[in-house]
Length: 199
Image 1 (cartoon, one colour):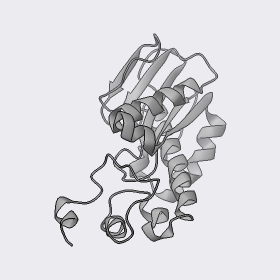
Image 2 (cartoon, helix red, strand yellow):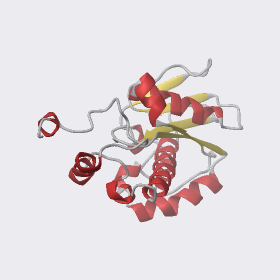
Image 3 (tube, helix red, strand yellow):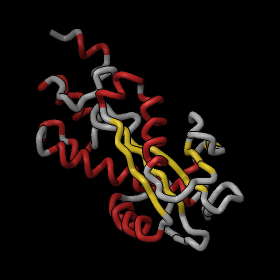
């Protein structure tokens, strides 16, 4: 059973990101403050949930939260500042959108930069331990998936509707065949070395 939050503060936000390992599209982060009486038996790390469960949880989180924020950091910025910095920037931007004064920040993972003067704690696999981080992981994933489904219509040959920009065999084959798009992260290794030397 997941605990509500990490700290003793009432207004603790959980934050998490989605899309760090993708070859295309943004890295998306969410920040969520849950009320002290929030309970949900299904809510968990978004990677443990089916697409259907995540979609069902999204409105429950949005309507039940004290407040939430979601932010995309796009591929140009990822290429400029690297994926780790872009992930932290997305988390900062999502926290910035919260309309309640945040007293404490719980962060999924082990890397974060201080946000203003608010105390924070990084928690490895935090999305499987605390409901506020799990809620952020579900929102980050559902908002990012929706964005990838939208840009899929522009470039259907990469099948982003299915792979969401992750480095599947099919996605790499499409890059090999069609080249890259404006949505691809140019700083990432888009093709394994052995493929790039086949002429």
